Length: 395
Image (cartoon, rainbow, N blue to C red; front, side):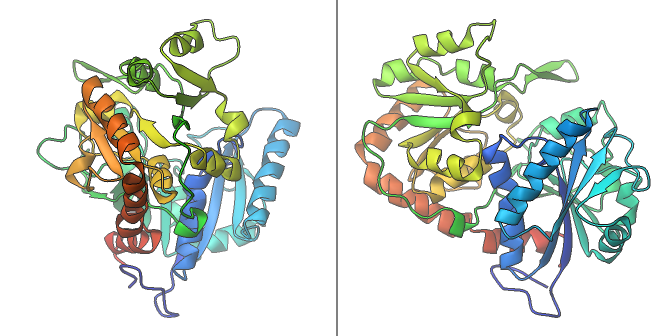
């Protein structure tokens, strides 16, 4: 068994396969940082970890192979080149090891890795049948609570093909959380940080902006007769007046196309936001970390579904801000029921509370900067969080 921050002994060392999608999104520095921390954190605990990347084919061999080359180049740079493979799939919903193209290891070696694995951690139902059946113990890792469960009411995502269910929805199963549990027992965890990746940074200049890195989307989901927004556009538009009223710099690294016909960039700028390209400024793990360090704090607006259903969601991105000594000011999703707030991590529920939070951070910056790091060390350290996640899986 491995629990808490204990390093695995020879007898307790686990073999884990982690399945997700990195190759498809090489320009997402925050996306890569999130999943690299699983690999590095589990390795630091003494476990043997293998990453299986699922890449839907673009239909053009040169495009597919360009993405695959970037993927392996990055994994080698992190010392993980011998612990990964890419499965190039023609269709996400029909995965068959005999039919798909494999890069990085031989087919027979991959079969043996699957056979000998103690655990599969399957992120967001990315790995499907019949591949799932090759693993003895299958764990679903949910990083988008509410979105995944409501979607599963309409589409067969293979949720019940798993044995254990982990979620960053820290309130799933509680009376005031409205996320449908789908008849399974969800085990909550908080997003963690692999602290060696995030040294405490020097204090940011007073004129440095409050920032965040986000995607601009328009999607909605239906839950019975209720429309739920999963749009960061809707989330930030509810607080678009904050920069002008706060009288200080705010910035969003958001993926708005230069020729965006909706004029969203100009709307944001008209309310005092500086808008930058995340793929340019935060397109690798290194540049993502630098972007966080040059920020004064994070101003985070979660998808509205998280507040509407009280998922208790907290962002892996916010965890990186905290570990870097950057305070986080975020709309409350119920997360304050499970993480300490008020020092380093502050929550708001309306524009007035958001403005009060900005003033509090700027007025007591050094105290909040130090508290942010302490919170990351005490509550978000991968050594402890991953141990608890493994314990929830029965190890």
